[in-house]
Image (cartoon, rainbow, N blue to C red; front, side):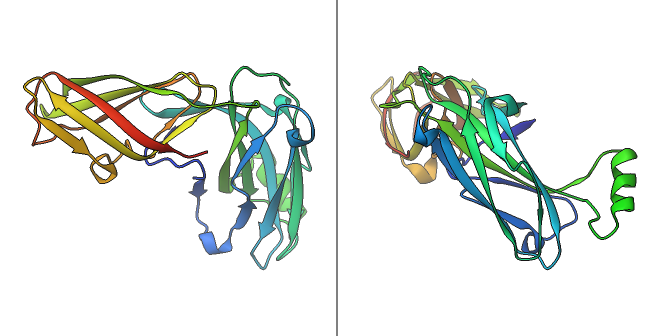
Length: 254
């Protein structure tokens, strides 16, 4: 599965709809959790809330999350790293179900590990079990609604450490000039580039500060621990095209 993570906050979630209104769907609370790799904090609770007037079926699973240098997110099944109870739920109208999730993986990771909790509403006909069985055997159960919550397995004293690897000039597909910025998170916790300010200096001494509103797609970017991220934005008109150096500041969001 690939997802774009531009404009990404640590609390963001993904909602995938298929012929269903958000007003008729369930809720997952909270959407983001930090787990400790061992001890009491290795178990966390979630709530699945049915806001509808009908019974719904929900399945909960876990996937490992990775983000490429260009911001493409990929996931792989990781149910073996967690114990989820219950993982399959039938919720009555307006019902609430608590779900306990326990980390079973490495109790001493060197850096923060990143996962997603996936909660899916399934198109199961709870009024007619025979019809549900037919749907299952003829092509699988259709997913009607999906939440993907953020899960972080964070060792004690984990910190981000973001460096500016480089600023370069590239040509876009249409021949336009692009400013390409590469960051490197050498820390042990993910970084979120919130309230990012980028101070640029051209080879001839022209100086320019790009504020968050000028850094669409870069501001609030997520860089996982030990990862690099590369961002491209239109070359600023006030800055001569050529060699550029820079510094940056940001407010890291935990």
